[in-house]
Image: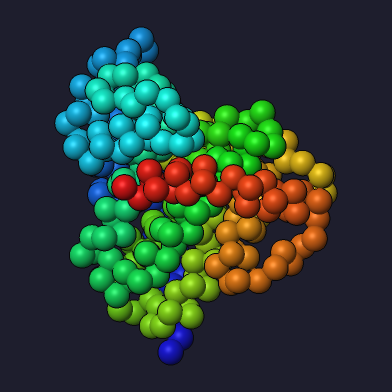
Length: 274
């Protein structure tokens, strides 16, 4: 079973054309997040107005409340029971993350994934793990906004999901899981960068996703891309149940911090998956 080179080339050419023109063939994803993204782009929007919009999406509202009462944001504090106060405590950026996470999870569970459902679920689990580890690493080791790091972790594999969504229903491009994973590995970072750019997301996020494979020699991460790189490596090692393959000080330190902060990491992962 092998990839059909002419079909694959034609497919990738079409994807590149769409993305270069700003088109996104990702309706489930866009529809699920459009209201939140539009609201957050409005100058002067307040917590009460955003809470009303969030309330129209029950699953999202539940996750906002859950994050507001999580160990990460409210360790041992008084519980938050109303959505407006939850929005105030959580902040606007994390709500964007939760909205996108919910849309991606719904895409994974949708019938449109078809034969790719198992791969999509594995990719989604990795995204959640990377996001939770990115949050902890940024919060414990850097001055980077941990919620921004969590967002970068959630969308770091969005190129893979875009490819799966576009491939769904096709039969002549890839004919086996090995071919599909090779296609994803080769193209997901570049396509993810294009998808996030087309969505007009902040430059810091777009740049971090584009630079997620670039290693660094420092002892401590100082950029969002470096936090993402470390979180991805630690997640890969956990999935393969191997030790740290690159014994760098940064990876060793981050692994220790994540292990010491497992309750916080698990709390963030739990919120992202509902």
